[in-house]
Length: 243
Image: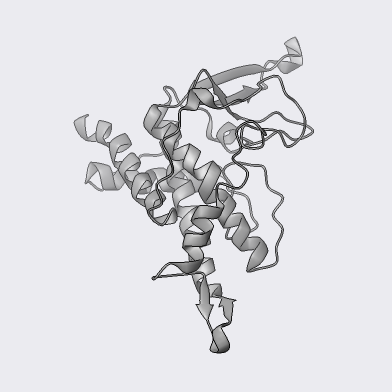
């Protein structure tokens, strides 16, 4: 049982290390989440706390993007003759793959962090911003970040959705904030600048290195991998066993 409890700590530690690498050790100013505005009643497509003008987060990722371009190791720009630079496609692809690896770990982490986990099929439908047919699934209220999943089982009889809010711990909130504000925009900037691809993705848990969507199998495989590392035994923890 003690080893099982260690699963969340192991996952958090791994996510923290991955986040630091993707941020190129950039440390943003300490943020008071209570100062962020998120109008929960706002239904306009594209709205989320990231796009709210009051928060001023739109260009925050550029600090990390500049580090990624000029880092002494694995920089995205390589110097050619006559002081000209060009994108290093291999380094760019490596960053996108590292982004996807971190996102898988983060996906499992929020499932372990916020009480009884959501159904994985519902977790994979979380949007980070509003779209025409669905409201965002990541919000901030009272200085705390939380996810909102929606059940549809009773809709045929009640014509209503059953919505569940799961608040993240302070540590996981910090990781999710850094992902949404810095890491994800950097990955999508790489897609635009290096690969001339304009991503139009609002799903939170979706890979940047490939166009396909993740399925419950991706979550299960990541949970098994993290579980084996944490338990130290040849035992697979699947979704059903964890719940």
